Length: 243
Ligand SMILES: Nc1ncnc2c1ncn2[C@@H]1O[C@H](COP(=O)(O)OP(=O)(O)OP(=O)(O)O)[C@@H](O)[C@H]1O
Image (cartoon, rainbow, N blue to C red; front, side):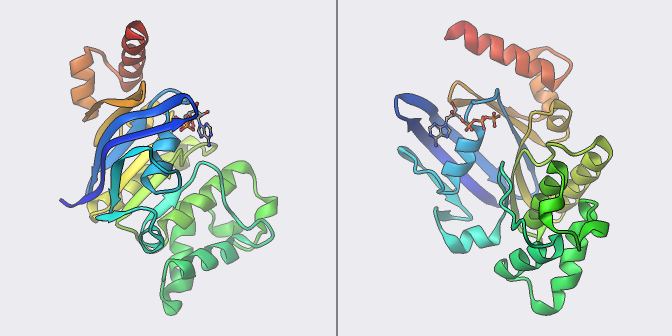
C-alpha cells in the first residue's frame, strides 16, 4: 500500500472562524475513505487546502509525495469539485475530449477512454448534446466522468452522487470499488450515510478535527450503534455537549 495523501496538523481559518484545527489524515492506495461531517464542518475546505487551492495557515499536506499546489500532480489525479466546472457551450463529448487531452490520454485512446467513462455514468446516449441543455444530475455525472479519465491512481470526489438516482449511484460505487481493487485510493465526501457504509474507512470531521477514522463496522461497534447514521448523530451530540 502506498501513501497517496499525507495531511499533518492542518489548520485553516477564514477571518475569525477556525475551520480546520489540527487535521491529520492519510489516504492510501487500495482504500476508499469516506469523509463525513455536518454541513459547514469543513470537508470542502479540507479538500481544497489539501490540493493547494486554499492556503493553509499551518500544517502540511503532501499529494503523491509533493507539496501542493503542483499543476503536474493535479493532472495526475482525478478531482471532482463540489461545483461543476464544465464548458456549457460544448457537447459532453467535446468536454470529455478536452479534459482527456489535458490529462495526457494518448490520442489513439481518446475516443475509447471517453466512451468508457461515459458508460460508467450512463451518459453514452447523451454525448452529442450540449452541456447547457443538461440537468443538474447529468452535469454531476459528466464531472464524475471527467474525474475518472485516464484511470488515475488517486480520486478526490466532493459529493459525487448528489442528484444521481439510486440505481446509478450503486453502479458508481461499484466502479469506485473496481478502481480500488486496481490500486486506486479514493477520498470521497458524502451526506448519504448508506454510501459511507460502503467505504473502507469513515473519517468523521467535526469541530475542526477528525474525531474518528475507522472501518464502518468498527465505528458502529465503538459507538454502540447499528448504523453510520447513528454514529454520526451520536458523535455530533457528544461534540456539541463539550462545546
Ligand atoms: N472562501 C471562504 N471564505 C470564507 N469562509 C469560507 C470560505 N470557504 C468556506 N468558508 C466557511 O468555512 C466553513 C466550512 O465550509 P465547507 O464548504 O468547507 O464545509 P463543508 O463541510 O464542505 O459543507 P457542506 O457539507 O455543506 O458542503 C463554512 O462555515 C463556510 O462558510
